[in-house]
Image (cartoon, rainbow, N blue to C red):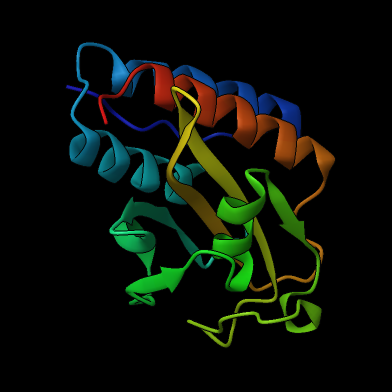
Length: 161
């Protein structure tokens, strides 16, 4: 049985603990849905100032909603549209301090003000994205970006797509 441990300390200490607990969640389990459901819940429990944490997967040339924590979300997002679709099109992490200023932003939740989206790339192919939203403007910075890119690498290596 795996128990989520609350974390306090510096941002880097929180992210070190998040990575440790992620490795524990992934240990011995490679199922995509099980791992994304647990990882979304873990992020939601540990990372402060989020109002949405979850996954979208590429299906039929578009992003389709996967496991998440937060309010109901947009179900389908076209590649190149919004922050998530732009991350797929560019094949790079998108860190947006003010989503309302982002051209073509898709407002699934009007309370979201900043966003971090990390593409899930396996064997050179974008398989989906990890999407994090916050009600705080400029919630995410370079340290968040590095931490979540590392977390996504752990996830992609330990999960079957």
